[in-house]
Amino acid sequence: MSSDGTTLMGHIRHCLEAFRGLTQALPLLPAISGKANFFEMLFFSVFLHDWGKAHGEFQKRLKGERTKLWLNSRHEFYSVPFVEMLP
Image (cartoon, rainbow, N blue to C red; front, side, top):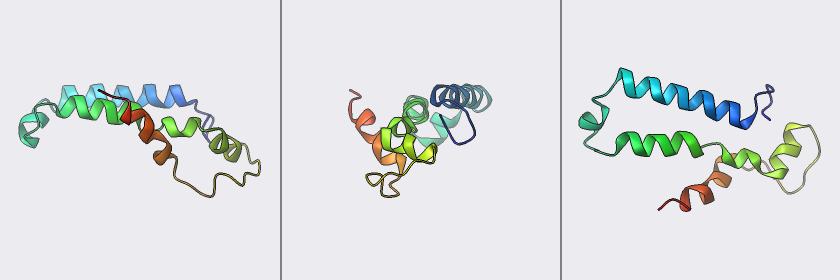
């Protein structure tokens, strides 16, 4: 759950809706960027960008609980292992 009460899955769902709108509104982005797989890379970036928020210590912090292990880390760093699992 985020600080505004949105669940992680709800947030990701909203992000994927924005992704879908972007692909429909700007279909030439792959050609402009020179990356044929632009939308594929963007999809995985959108889908995986906040998975680090599931970290137990981050969740404690959101609940206002003390945590010595979080050390003001960025949740994005904890999303990287999910990216590394992609083929």
